[in-house]
Image (cartoon, rainbow over all chains, first blue to last red):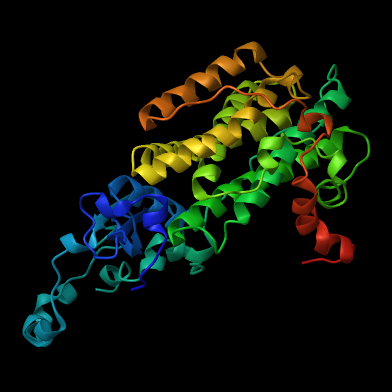
Length: 115
Length: 290
């Protein structure tokens, strides 16, 4: 991480509560966009912002400028609980050979969307 | 099974119509609309063509010069995200300039295209307000200027949306949504800086003091006044917005006036270098396409 990023100079974010890093860098946010015809919000990337409001405007400018979205979610990356690569085998491998868990033995009618 | 997987790819699931035609090009966006779609471009009878052209030109010049200043923040903004935000705003304004120049060319009888206005006029022929051409200064100055210009332009466009020329009205209607965001972006930052640290407050106040002398010019009678509904209320409305933001930010709007007006072609020494940079390539290679 760079030592100087200009944030202190322009906004003095180091004394804004919630800034987690030592260099006064803005916290990281994850961005989720729901596309025009999308059913659910999809993770599209991450960005830095001083607070939720700024994260939303940044997300709007970074990820929807080509008309991609109709709704934005942002969430502090720190607030996401994630599985770790170490757990990969115990988490995911056991489902690998259980084909009967997939609804492949049914005929899905063509007019039933989003299955 | 296949259907559940289709959401796994972020771009695919955002792209409109990907299931039908297989042309998922998320990066290029989808569903764009032409702001002039269905608008009759014939000039209605009874409209003063010269006045309409002058109005389009003045508002187009404000947008082009502002866009150039905002683009100059590229690689220099304090944060990558702000750089994108400022460039986005600049591109919105560039889009407005293009439509306005195109309209000016249609109505002033010269049949010039947008490039002719942007690249092949000299500084004295530009009619933008001087506030737009002032150098970027620091981030606080640029934000102070952006707040004032976008609050003013939004109020102007709201008064243009019902104007007699259908093309200008459509351009204004499109611009209102863009300018509402620009004003909000700038107001957010003005409050952040004013309410931030001692240093950010000091710089914002300095920026506001530096732009204050150029406020008067925005409300003087200009080529666009004749096309506006209720031009007399413009100053009060914009000033009220600015005061509200300044109050939330804990800063003062100074009263000062720099005589003269960019609307008469009387510019500061800063416009010529800006246009040199903007026009250099097009003038060196007049027939170039890109």
